[in-house]
Image 1: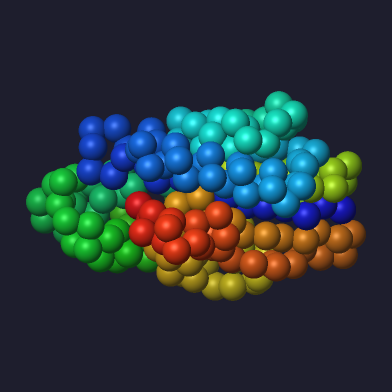
Image 2: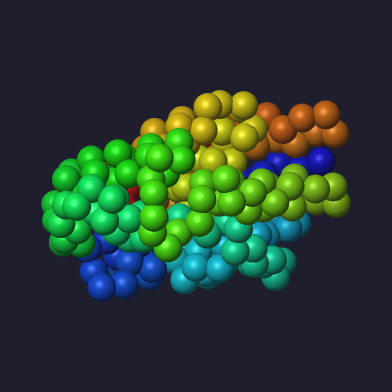
Amino acid sequence: MPEVYLVRHAQASFGSDDYDRLSELGHRQSRWLGEYFAGRGLAFDRVITGSMRRHRETLEGIAQALKDLPTAAVMPGLNEYHADALLDAHAEATGTPRLDRKADRRTHFRLLREVLHAWVDGTLAGGAHPSFTAFSAGVREGLAAACARGAERVLVVSSGGPISTALCQVLGAEPGTMVELNLQTRNSGISELRATSRAVACMSFNTVPHLDLPERREFITHA
């Protein structure tokens, strides 16, 4: 049964008209992560990603240094939740103006935490977004594919929400824990799982060894 490396995408384009693309720094973070994997002599027998652009671009950056990666299996169940749809549903339900996408990050994430908790506990009504139950089912399917027999080491490139949800499933944590884990995830951060025939164990969460150098610490990001 495999070791599974869950990688959150590198820095995307927060505050722009298209968040779903890597920033210039994001491209560098993904290349540095590939160099880190290559430097440790890691090889992956299975690769799985969500279907979002930022997942694909992160994998492309990793692959620049880590050659001979298997063709990725694309699983939309590993895509991020639709934050804009959730925020719109909250604005509609509360009768408050929709937060401008260019609002400062602290204000944005304070509101997002509130909205995510309402989504997870089922009290966020309306809006064109899937339920948290449906979202979790897609993550569970992706986790099962990552932990299936037939591979020694698996690379999964996804987003903070699915990775945090997967960790809650592995740990048996309350669903609301996903929100707090999610809002702590760092761009290109690694969480490691070890699967056996009996269970899946969490070995690490949200590490950035490829950025934990004096000259790179300023490039650790969360959004």
